[in-house]
Amino acid sequence: MNANENAIVHLAVYDTLADWEIGYVTAHINNETWQQTPGRYKIQTVSAGLEPVTTAGGLHVLPDSLLADLKPADSAMLILPGNDLWPTDAYKPYVDKAREFLDAGVPVAAICGATGALALAGLLDDRAHTSNAAAFLDGLGYAGGQHYKEERVVVDRDLITAGATAPVEFARAIFERLELYKAPVLDSWYKLYGEQDPAGFYELMSA
Image 1 (cartoon, rainbow, N blue to C red):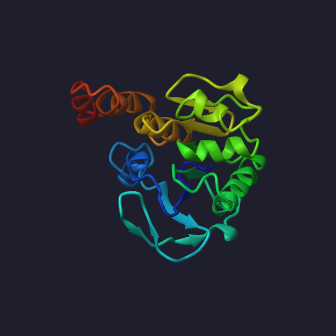
Image 2: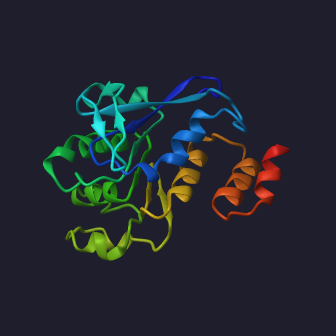
């Protein structure tokens, strides 16, 4: 992708979406400060329908676009936040779209319950991954247990996975994949938000 090309990062939205898991991602992609190519990316929400959805925090979100219309070639990444729908048929369209993206070599980032949905669909059977806990995925009877990593975030090829308690690490992996920041800036960003080290703030201010 041309570094100067505008690109869409698609954020799946649905009822019970876990707001806290994607807050760092959306806020910093939308904030051009410190980005090495400001304005290169924008967030677009995508859902199975166009009716408003209600997040776990009670916020109402009006989707920008339909999931069925989304093509991997038109996206820089698909992000799947955690939710309570993941073990139900209502979540199948999102899993199917994730499979389509991965087959096309376009990255997918999944956190919390969304990783459970990918596990049930067999999408974690041959990829290193993480989730809320090994026991969470093992309880689903999936076949990818040998690839589970006890880490906050795991990247394997075009798939980023994380657990519910790692929204900062999830964001960092997404930013790294998108090349949102230069490496030293990303290190300072994580120093501030991940390590809670004030030195990161002053480094960012001088970047």
